[in-house]
Length: 426
Length: 66
Image (cartoon, rainbow over the protein chains, first blue to last red):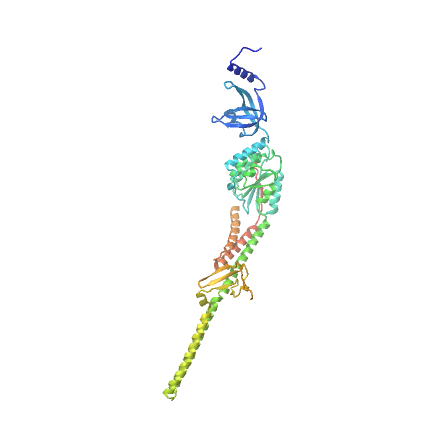
């Protein structure tokens, strides 16, 4: 029953015609996983679509790629919509793709991941860009729905702990069409018209991924990034993580947590100020105590001064005695009829007494000089003082970690005791 | 107005803390120590005064009404 032999090109042309006119193959949606993905420099995309058992070559023209919302990736589960075309010269067929829908985790999850990746690459989430939340805000702005529980929660928390900060409420739609635009616009408005706002809370209460979606829109992330005013996001519950959260200067788990993070507790502020004052008092106390200790440690100098005075006093005293003796002697010589020889003899005796007295005075001075701590120190000895400026004379006075002061002739040094070795008896 | 006040509080607080920090300097003279102490007390009083004058306002700005 075979027809007469035909040429290869005739066969391929025939197959081409058959496939192209088939109603199913002309408009088909194929489920599969992307592999061998290649972006050609012409802008066209080539890949294979496969399942566990089979695969088909796919071609996506540049003009079709342009209106596909997703970034194609290796391993991505998709529905490829298109038609089967035949490449006659090569004798093979492929799927000519017109549009792609992403399957698997679902549309929103994929969009989320893709936007996250894109903004991350741009640095929208960079830690370095994040602004600090001021410790003591004067004005805060709240961007949320006027009817939501979130606003009530925020107001309750803020007014409950802080009776100082002014609250500016900017009502916006937080879900549905146009919500993202309203949120972004409110953020821009606060920046443009209320630049003295110290911190901004954006958020809403819990809901489904779709409900929270406005906070995953690019326009919101960009407004947050552009905001000069620090933004705290509080969207949904703890488990909800939005693009807005990542772009914000601070992510709070819920609107309530955002309110808590935005303003300080006034009682705490008052306590901190009180503590700062106590700290000031303590420190001036330490400074004064330090002076007292310094005066106490100057006892060495004071002691030296007293010794000087004592030396001077004894010098004066011995001088007086000598002077007196001399005068007495002169009187004796002048006023008596003693024989000169006798007189000279007596004079010698008196001189001997005087010399002995002078010698004793010198000895005394020498002894006192030896006792002067400054003289001892000038020889290279040092004194060790405890924290009250008292001399250490025994290892029993020293404990480990004690702070001691070493005084040498031209200064002093504070030291800490590492180890104490006491000589034991016997 | 609010901006001015805010600077006052944060500055006062910062200066109060700075005064206390200055007091821990090893080489501070007694005169400077006393001066810092007195300044600290002055800023402490300023902080308290600002807090005592708290007048919280809550306002709603409806974009659509503009």
